[in-house]
Amino acid sequence: MASNTYQAVGNKLDMSEIITNIAPDDTPLFNMIGRTKATAVTHEWLEDTLGEPRTNKQPEGYTYTTEAVEPRVRLNNYTQIMHRGIHVTQTQEVVLKYGLSSEVAYQMQKTLKELAFDCEKALLTQDSKMLGSMEEARQFGGLPYWVVTNDFTPSGGKLTFDEINNALEQTWNIGGKPSVLLVSPRNKRIISTFTAGNTKYMDGNKTSKLTQMISVLETDFGTVKCLTDRYMPNDTVYGLSPEYMKKAFLRPFKQGSLPEVSDMHRRYVKGEWTLEMRAEKAHFKLSGLDGVIPTSN
Image (tube, rainbow, N blue to C red; front, side):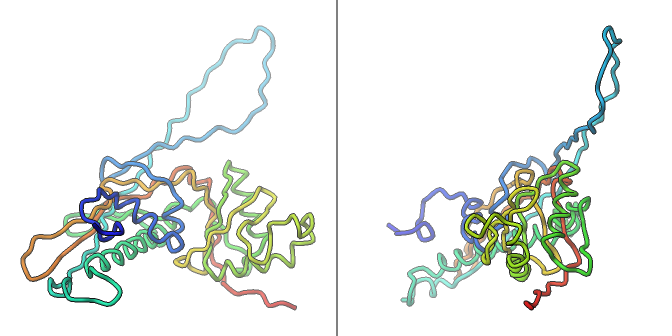
C-alpha cells in the first residue's frame, strides 16, 4: 500500500480540491474564492441592486401608490477548458531512482501544481471573454475584465495609504466593502512603508495591526487583509470582496490515463470552469502604479 495519495491507486480523488490546496501560497486568489456549479458553457447569474434612499413620509389617510420595479440584470461568463498532460517511458517508471519510487506520480504532482498556477494566471490576466469555436478555445473573463466601475488611477502612479482609503471610500459610497487587497510582492513592500507615516494616527504600536510586516491594514472603512500574489503585476492593486466571487465548475478537474499506443505511461489532468463575479461594484482596482518603493529620509 502506498504511503501517500499521490502514489496510491484506487483512492477516490476530487482533483479540484487537490488543485485548490496543493499550492496555497502561490495561488491565493484561486484558493480564496468559493466554489459553485456551472451547468452550461455560458454560465449565467442574476444581479440586483438596491435603490437609493429617499425621504419617506406619508400623511394620514394617504392613497397607496406603486411603481415599476427595476429588472434584475443577467450576467454571464464562459467556461474554459484547462488541460495538462505528461508521459514517462515504462522503463523510466521501473528503474531505481533517487528520492522517489514512481516517476509518473512525481510528474503528476508537479503537473497539478502547474495547473493551479494556470488557474491563478487566468483569474489575474484574462481581460476579455470569448465563446470560441471548435477551432478557437473558450475563455472566461478574469479580474481585469470584470472590475471596471471602481477603477482608480492614483496621482503620479504612487501607491499610498490615502489612495487606498480613497478607493475604499468611493467603493463604500456605492455599497461595497472590500476586505482583501490583492497585491504584488513589490506593492506589498510599498504598503509596509506606510507604518512610519501612519503610526501617529494609531492608538499606539501595541494595539496597532499596521506593522512593518503588514498582513492587515486598518483603514477608515474597516480592516483590510493584504494578500501577496506572485503573479500580480506591479502596476495594479485589487480591492476585493471575496464573498461575491465563485469559481464555477462545469467539469471538475479529474486525472486519467490515455490508451497505450507506445512504450509510455501517459497521464492527463483536465477540467472546465469559469469565474462567477457578482456585485462588480463591490470591488475596486488601482491602476497605473509605478511600483517604486519610497526612499526613507
